[in-house]
Image (spheres, rainbow, N blue to C red):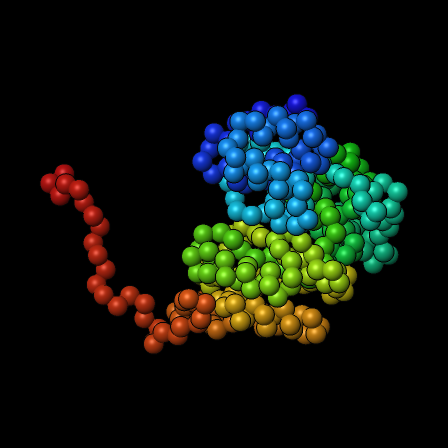
Length: 320
């Protein structure tokens, strides 16, 4: 408990402290440190103190509380938290479907796939196969890396388990807690936010009845926020990882140029087992055919985007 005390006190010096208070209150709650919460409340304003108490006592999901907004924090403050918005902590926490007593065994087909991957590397560098093998194990294990799954990868590569855990906790593509059959990952980086990603989030949360980091009760959908996925030209966008059919039917598709109505259509199609249109919903590639504006697709005329003479470079002193 003492480990987190300074983090509590330090973060309150910042004006944008809501995120920090929520995260650290959850840490205190998770560590069952009621005394730490009481000590942390002392230097807070009344409103902030009420916030921390509310998180501890609220019936609302702690995942929802944890994922409201973002705040820049020091590495020492955040190193214990997961890289993605689905897993809470880097530290493993036993659950009924993820503990050392569970069993993970490679299927015959996937064991062959794993060996084919290992054979791409020199024998003394086979540890280089850790990322593709973790990806393969995640696909077989219904979208997440359980402790036995990571241990199985370590055994195949003759690595100590902790080295595999380090990789799995570093990359946001790896899920270390259970996800739904369809993992919906909404881009939350600046270009997508400027084009209305926040409205897509509101629509997805309303349609699915969950918040960022949560899974629907039927186990079909998990909603997460991802950082830039490189489709900025067709913002806003989301990606869907399909774990419903194991390795053989696994897919990871982008859906771009999205309006709130488009996201509803995608969710409904997935519910029915259908395949929604992938990539841009309105363009063939990234040609200048229009733009998402105010939640709607606004088409443009022609294919010319530069309609005025380009401005010359700005020179502060032309005599130089």
